[in-house]
Length: 596
Image 1: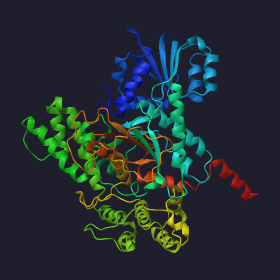
Image 2: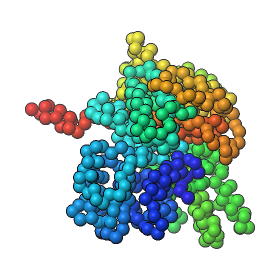
Image 3: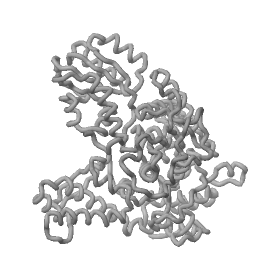
Image 4: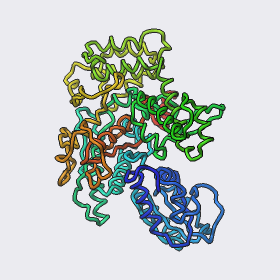
């Protein structure tokens, strides 16, 4: 079975690929080669294994762009993106001499007329099928989707962007394929922003129009709005969540450790390095990823002891070396024990990067973000709260960590004076890198306060009362998007206008509050409404967690969340700094002007 929880987004995408591509051209006893480009390789890898493909008659999976030996007696399936690069590579396989007996071509999305005509002209006799299947997104997790396009951030928010409209159009097309895959025609809503940044509204209007066009061309019965909602919002609506140090397991690990492409590298007891993939094929990771690190560090040793006890091994102190011995003695438990070894190391690495390094900083961040200290007293002087981060020794915190604290201070005040900002920049020693802070203005976030009337344009969102929630002192902040999700489920959203029509019967009245706890059953979400959230400019791991929490807390709505890419605080700060950079071509021209 394909990876990921049953009926999650990965499972849905795999079923769609299986039915639309593999079953479409499958014949008993006939094996085929599957050709993929970079995007479709990621797509298949995210939702299935090679064993799944073999069950569907695929014998070899090849890279479209690599040199390959001809196999003229076999047919090939081409699952590719409708780009000039992929289409040219496909044509090369059949011109001047065919590498394969025939081609079954499936595009992830709409194929432009010029590329379609090129295929028809250059190699029509070998093509048995040519279809568009409308899947141009990646199911990152069971309830999270991305377009793997970090560059979209700069294209949307840079004041020098030359491709903003094109990027918005691309994102709109990809969002439509997500809705089509979920078999939904949702009511599209956008956040009515008080700032001048209105890209979310622009994108929402594009998506609504393209959804209408899609279902007209599709000829299905989904022309009317279904019982689902799509909410689109700019990244600047909540600048706090992606900057704050989050101490739930997944968010903390990706923030503090050098995890790239979901791969965690650690040293084993013998000194050798090992790579571990943090995805939904690791059941322990799925169970732990949204827990607070304090819960994780308690839970993992207990789980290991349970397995140890089941084999009647001595109940000694659990160590990584002890796990290695258990693995040798109990082959049937190797996979489970290997996962626990990974998470013992991962949790330990997280805690090593927390204690004595950012533990006090996290308390400061929470006080600034929430506006109250750990005792529930209002923070009357945010500068006094921030001061310990700025005081000597200078190397107590990294430059990025100081910047994050300064940003949270500024966000808490909805902007500061230019004089105060210059002093802060001097303290953090980023006089030549002040764009880390100033460029947040491009997202509509106030950085420098003004006595003018315009200063009243930015309004902080009204927050839900969570004073009764049980939380850790260093984890009191709740992402704003969780309030939005709960309000949407309960039909209480304000300042979120519909682009056109609302769903005929949005299922808000049956919803229970996401703060009410119940034990979800397997049938909880059967036939439920869907809430789809798209954050323009990146989604953080803490916001991803909220989608699961709200879904688990309600019987009436399943929440999906996504963006062009997934953010970590470090990557976000670097992206923010680069917003003021000129495009390469323009930069060259400016240099030529200045030198002449």
